[in-house]
Length: 225
View 1: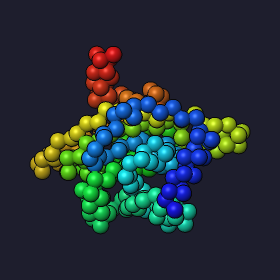
View 2: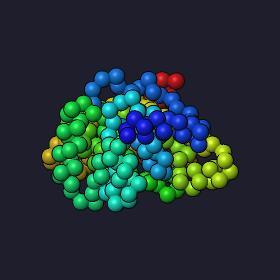
View 3: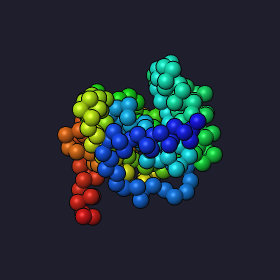
């Protein structure tokens, strides 16, 4: 069933979207890593499987979607891991760690939910905690144009939805010192989100539009161009 769903995704997605994908040379060739992406619409998860389908990926999804039959079906065959977003979920955490130690690729949206406006929301520390705790590298991915409203509007007009997908440079986070845990996790989360923000148009950078770290990354980028 998984292969059938993947084939269906590869058939349908190019017919309902006009994908502009860049930066795929940045994907690590070996080893486990964390894919951290922004989240504008339900289409994002499908795009993830379309673009990363040749990798052994699994996706963390909010527990509310596990209560819906269709998403439970997709989760079973596309390897969603439904977790409690608001309370410590030690069982899910252990499962994530086991899968990554086995060399699998974790796909996670640090915002924790869809952005209703399309603009970046404040990131949650879960992705940075997982990556830093085990020392896994992070591949930032920026997706733009996938809001549910835009998708429905284009489908009604029988037009393909223009979507951009960008993969940035892989980077790693350092250890988390116990005495500065909260401050370091916040800094690491901002690092992830700003590396996503720099690949997005200015108007959708949301709460990170004027972040000092984003400005530093933009200055570094200008030096290399």
